[in-house]
Length: 317
Image (cartoon, rainbow, N blue to C red):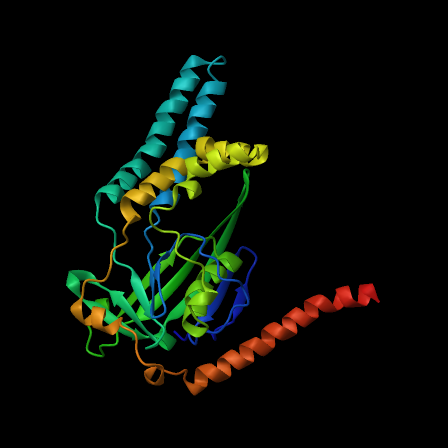
């Protein structure tokens, strides 16, 4: 099956698919690390991890809060019904909770490392093995699906990044590897992909800083709340209390600090050497095909921006 050209968008009634690589061309979106996937960034390498324990904790917290709220507000209607809600809620929340506990007890998976000077990607695999994949061979696609029910419209989506084993003699079950990010698809997935694309094609200054690790106290949930309280920022205090009580951001922060206060590094001796900086004259260059694809894509994005602004220009006239 052939891969659609990068920059292609396929829209249907209840779905949308966006192809962003190969070849890796700009999406036109601003890089945004919506899932705290950037674990380490410097002038040579960018480490991307898919271990988002904080998001899982917040999801679980919200589910528990909904179940408890339903049981509380129905307690005066029918005690048996309230008890049934707690039982059903416990079953629904119980399985994800066990998965979450298993994630907290297991080791953090190694990140994928993007080397912008060599224009290569190190993909850790099982049993201490890894792949070195050319950057321009990486595939990226965003998929988004919508469903409609009595509760309304629900939309889910993924950013999927794929890598091909460079070994031509690899077995069939070891030829492909893909990594999925539950970021909602569409423009959100493009913004997340741009963190990797902009780093490789523009530089580290174009990418957000890592938010993984133990932050300064004034930037923690409780610390920022106290700072807002001292400033007399009522809205900031109310928003902080809402996030901690309703969204469970305090527990999410502590779980992330527990597992990612010191993100795992790639332990391979060859990759440690591979990750060292090179003299500028030894940096790998874009292929002519990618240069042409980027120029074409930039022209398309400029035309789209001009088309969007033209009605406003006519209205001003």
